[in-house]
Length: 202
Image 1 (cartoon, rainbow, N blue to C red):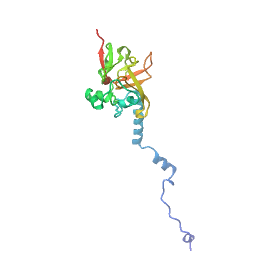
Image 2: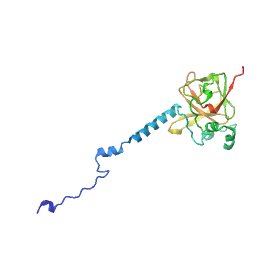
Image 3: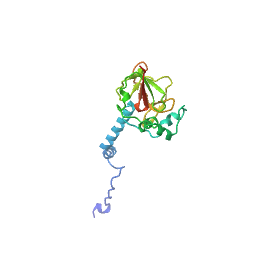
Image 4: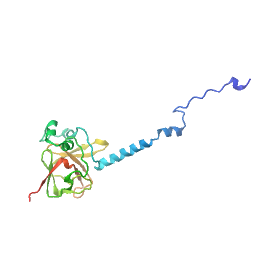
């Protein structure tokens, strides 16, 4: 009689996640090429938003929620009334905090002397004297007119920015960044659709 007849070999168990070689486990956990592309795209998108270089972003139904949560405005209408008063593009930006495509607004190339006003309530917002070319594709200013705008913290898209809105009606205008020229060092990056321009009388 052979020794193997007394002690037959035990059947081998199939490999499990707990018994797989470390290399196999590491390989299964590694991101696929598609996953790597997604992660890189998400990172690039977040950076573009932070820099104010995203062509079109819409945060649903918070336009004025962000501002109105702690502020009361002289000009206030129902959502239905705002839709009647504004064009579709103006409503999307002023009341839904959308962002227009860069270089799409004629106001980006407006260089005459005059005043930029809110498209929602006509309040004067910026003087042409404070406008500068930021090379971003959006009308930019280094300071607003006195008490013309309000701000609140914008935590959308996984980052923290400073939102800018009209102090009279709460309409969203854009964001302010700290990479502007002297004397303030600020860049009020505004949506052209959120404003109208009134040339200075000759």
